[in-house]
Structures are given as structure tokens and as C-alpha cells.
Image (tube, rainbow, N blue to C red; front, side):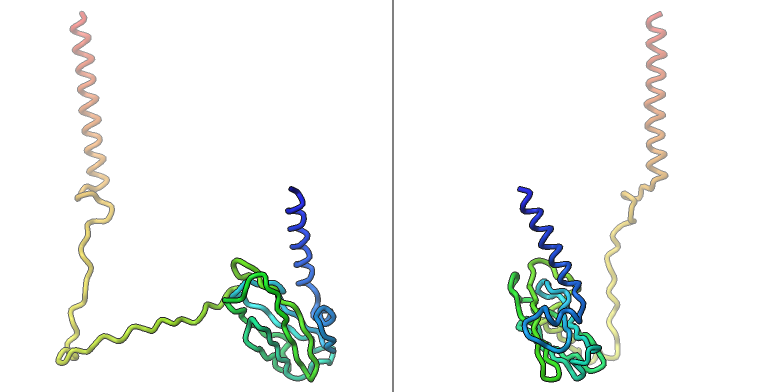
Length: 198
């Protein structure tokens, strides 16, 4: 039974180590021999999550615009002078699938893997566009344009925390009267039973 937690911990550790590979060292990680470094961070993401796409411009292998594409997000361009861009993974990406992310720059290409995880995105998701149309404007009534209608007001619904006009002070006074009456009745009944027994 310990094999499952140990295997899970080993897998999580391996994922953490692979997402920490420097961009320059990532060129050898993907399929293809690009003369520039590149990376996808994180390398495992849930549908709707946001990934950062990076290229290494210091090595000189990528000076022009870099285009990055994958089946699970729209193509992205990393412009000269910039080293990264972001992409949002499609909401309908299949959990567990591994996709190849293609980096192209100055005629060279390289690929990196992107795994689609299940559950909640690890980055802040961008919600899908709304398909609900806004409500139409209210119709204008002829002859009523100059005079605004009466403002609508809510119903008067009581006095907040009071119960039918009783405040905390009134309830306290009533409780004191009840306790006083019960105490007086007890006192007089004990006194009377003491005189009856004599």
C-alpha cells in the first residue's frame, strides 16, 4: 500500500525538476535541434490554464520573431526584444493528453511537450467568451420622455432586530418583573409554610 504514495511523490518530484530546467538547457529537452533555448512553463497544465512560452535570445540562435504553436492554444508570436509570451490552453483540451509545442525562429524549429492535467488550472484561467446577448434597452413611451417616472422604493419591512416593537430594554425589564414575581411568590410561600408548621 505504501507503493502508491511513494510513486506519487516520485512523480511530483520529477515534474517539479523538469519544470525548473533553465531555458538554455531546454533546447536539448525537446525533439528537434534548435540553435536556441526554449521552454513551456509549466509543462503540465489544466484546461483553461495559462502557460508561459520562453525563448533564449542570449545565445544568438533566435534574433527575429519566434512563433509558437500547439494544438491546444492559438499561435503566439514572441517579438524581437522579448523573451516570453503567454497562451491560454483551450477549455476543451483532453486531460492526460501530451501535445507537442512547436517553436520556430530564424528558420530553425524545436519542440517541447505540454501535458494536459485534470482538475483546476494551475494558473488563473481566462474565462471563455460569453455568448449571452445583453438585454435590449427599455422601450420609450411617447409623451413620457420629459417626465421621469416615480422612483421605485422597497417595502417597509420592519424595524431590524426588534420583535414587534420590543427592544432589548423592554425585554430586560419584562424578564426582571417575571423573576421578581417568581422570587416574591417563592419567598411568601416558604414563609407561609414555615408559619403553618409551627
